[in-house]
Image (tube, rainbow, N blue to C red; front, side, top):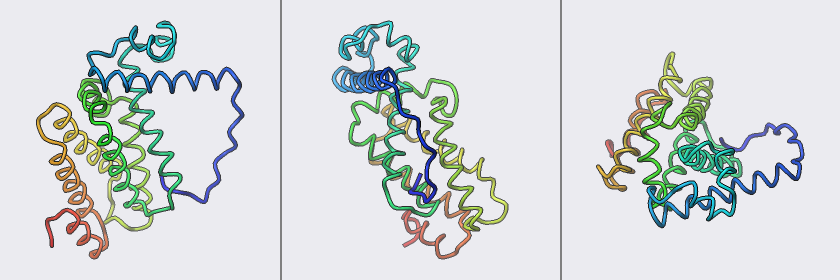
Length: 223
């Protein structure tokens, strides 16, 4: 997720058709966000989305399958943007990268609450990691990659099961996000409790006593 000295593989040039497909997809997702912000999730229909994006209804079904497919693609696109943003930033340590990932996620959601709240309330009903399917699995893999790097660098204690730890961190965050999306808790309480949960989890596995105390201080438990 952070900047890397490894040069990415050469990406083949896109054909004109591929560029048009990519542009159409971006326009559809932008239109979906506009509809949800203005009318809520119940206002998002395939016909209305096709009209707003200026495409045929059949095109939407071909590209996304159904409305749920549009929502998953919308979230996945948001994650794409987060990763692009991370790639443009200076390299950071793996544990800091995990912290920054969730900070960026919250910043993204917080700037468009009217859009993201109904989306997350809907996605909780789907398959896969906390109802987010391949998108949820993708976030877990990102976290696991960073934690595995931290373990390799002896930043974590003992034989840490980074796969299980990554899934716990993600699921705990999404549980709180679901509570916010469904109106059980307020946004500020979600942010505060999520940051507390993450820092306490990290403090339990960080090897360095100094870094462990720093995590506890970040949680607000230790002054």
